[in-house]
Image (cartoon, rainbow, N blue to C red):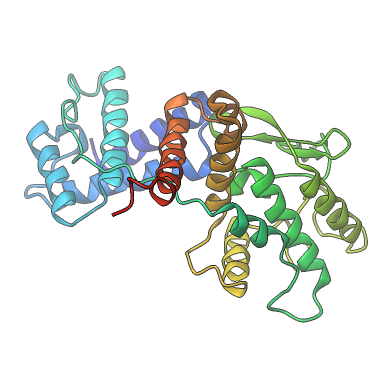
Length: 316
């Protein structure tokens, strides 16, 4: 297998992932980087083997090298998964006879709980009306609508930035997400190309109506996008991250606040109030209930804090 053949095999494998599993462009990019890392490991060997010639022992050594470099166990597990899938695909196409990654496990990793804001901090963050810029009411209206929606509906930031003002289907554009303020709901396309509809709270609906009224006067460059940058184009994930972090620092929340913190806060606060794990799973768009169960641990931490503060025999 020449380098060109290797590249062709990698391209064909990634194309299949996109076509059959409907993985996002970002996920496909991650797989490509993981396979490129594998090629770099192989290139460092003397003599340099073809990827199809790599042995179980060599791949185990690669995993050990990543661990010795203090690479996060989660990242090692992801790379091994990408490599295992690639070699499995080579086996299906009769390029190799066995999968050399089979049986190789990543180092054990802890399961840190997701970070969530307190209810007071979350509400303060999404309702704050001051800005670090002067005379910028369109940005303020946009930011408030975005942050209210993130906290109200627990969306992933990529789902939110993909939203359109309303459903549209044209020759050049088909909506993957949109809002229906009259119904009080938002429809998004999440991981695995799965579509779901989530309720939107009254505060977020009001903020969205205010922003859409402002948006109508802006003559946006993107006629479909719900949330816009200063140039009138669809807002990027990175810009949302920067604006939210700046808002948190401005109002005195010292922790590193990013959009996923609002998603965690949404899940934690709804679960604390309702105890309905299945409903939270549906609203978050988790394929497995195990992904949602981590919030039960987060909720137990809160209960433990209440107990420690209130019970006379819990105090030291």
